[in-house]
Image (cartoon, rainbow, N blue to C red; front, side):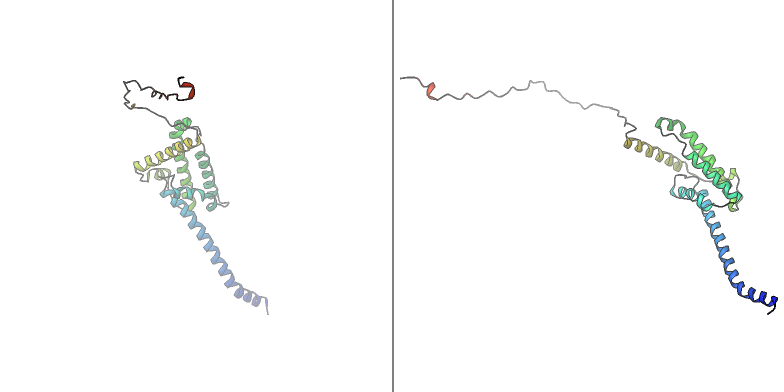
Length: 203
């Protein structure tokens, strides 16, 4: 067989194998893209409820689903590390927590917005910071419920750990009447006559 004939035979044999491998590669790429889209969509739809289980699950999947050497993937992972560091920056002291809570929550929001912006570029969306910040409906009651739930959880943990005392406030005292009569003394002792031989009179 000539060289060209060998090349033709090799192409006929290798063609189906290469086609299958190419199909598997495309499926892998498509599956990875869909998983990254799932993370982004979950974070976008729950960005008004950052303490929800779905939001936390999506955050913890970032390092796994956005792994790789691509520039956009690295930017997402860097944003996530900065956000994670900010989430753990709240003081453990109850008094300092109350003073830091508002500014801490504001910085959390800024970090999350930057993370979602870089993530949108990585998955092919064209969102800006203003759209990410404003384009969401969050009822005020839901926001208050989230903050109150966190405050109650921290208070319960401090109480159970013995780091905080439960305040007591006495508003009224029960009206207890005092007895005016003196308490009776002990009952008189009964006198038992002595009938022994020593007590009998002589005749």
